Amino acid sequence: MFVTASGVDIDEMGYAMSRLEIESELFDGGNTVHEASSSTRPGKPFPKVDDEISQLTNLRSGPNDRLHQLVPGKQQLPVSPVRMLAGREGNYSGKGRFSSADRCHMLSRYLPVNGPWLVDQTTSRAYVSQFSADGSLFVAGFQGSNIRIYNVDRGWKVQKNILAKSLRWTVTDTSLSPDQRYLVYTSMSPVVHIVNVGSSTTESLANITEIHEGLDFSSNDRRYSFGIFSVKFSTDGRELVAGSSDDSIYVYDLEANKLSLRIMAHTADVNTVTFADESGNLIYSGSDDNLCKVWDRRCFGAKDKPAGVLVGHLEGITFLDSRGDGRYFISNGKDQTIKLWDIRKMSSDTSCNLGYRNFEWDYRWMDYPPQARDLKHPSDGSVATYKGHSVLRTLIRCYFSPEYSTGQKYIYTGSHDSRVYIYDVVTGAQVAVLKHHTSPVRDCSWHPHYPVLVSSSWDGDVVKWEFPGKGEVPVLANERRVRRQYHD
Image (cartoon, rainbow, N blue to C red; front, side, top):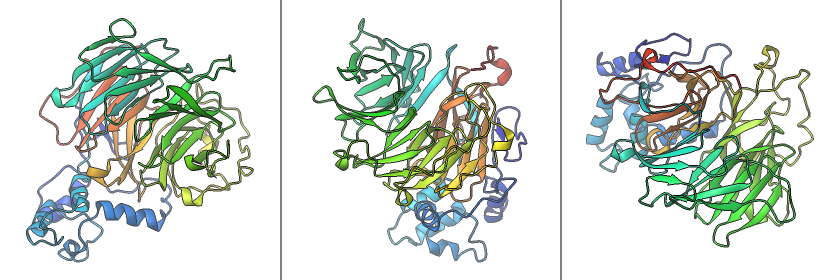
């Protein structure tokens, strides 16, 4: 089911459409097309986003300037497909074909909001769901020890069903190697397990049908246990970087098969780590100490010293996603906001990150206090803040939309209120809200090339949203199993 920014259900059957179709009719003579809404968010006006990120987004997703000249006075509206095709035939780009920005301008208008269609349905909470870099594989991790890898190109057939070894609480994260041959998975344990994805065995039972090699992230002189919340392969596939419950960042050398570095990075759980770009030199981390930090691997000799700190969240950080340019990234926070950051504005001073909360609150079982929703950090250094979704009970994840098809024009996120929210990076508008699940949506993933988005939830459903859809019958709420309500 699709819900507009004003909360109105558009279609009770689960099909979705969006309101930019009205604008599209202005261009195409009334031929309605289901596209992304450009309406503004209700309530307070969205502050002006940094000019540079606006320009960069426009360069990646805006059409050739000459195409706007064909529609005088309507430069703010998207150029219709008919005029885009006419521009291509007229060689307005000078290349005889669509530029990458032209392609993004076309594709980013068609959001994956139709459906949903069922990919999988289990009785276990889904914690992780991610497309591979090329979109050929999809990984879903469940609390009940199963990790399933689906072959997208073969009709979402289960290519490998992994039964996790020594699982503590749940699968907290997974990561595919750059060559997609190996997958690592983590739980609330210092041991990370690695599985051969490319083997012919479909049922991968730890150390029964296949070896799940354990990589011990605990050093020899430490006898206490900790959990790992986040793990990522390096871009060359030779190392793993992880964030843990003992306030640390770990780097594991896969070639040497040993832990190569531990950094006491924060003063609370490190919930999320990610690489800034393909170079692998910069690492971003986010923690329950409310801080985002930037780490330069070339300066790791200065142990425990970040290259800079970014202050602005009032509560802990659940997830980070990099724009991939070594400059911008987004963070999801327990203060119920997503923030956009420019690392050139980072500081070396953390003293301004003082506690501003004058109330008791725990996101694991309490709603966010109404009096806190309009609070702002006095030293907030973020470029923009996005509100509307809910970050409660679990480490909700957020992402930039794909560069290939949208020019990273959007930000999308799961939510505790069982929905998926899509925001416009520049305007802050909620361009789509996808409603189907009955429990928190912890993770979701947008296909790198096609308008397909998959959401996974604590209700056990893994579903895909598409544009325009393939004609199958979507999942209907009254056909789904009745499940108990989750409250933690």
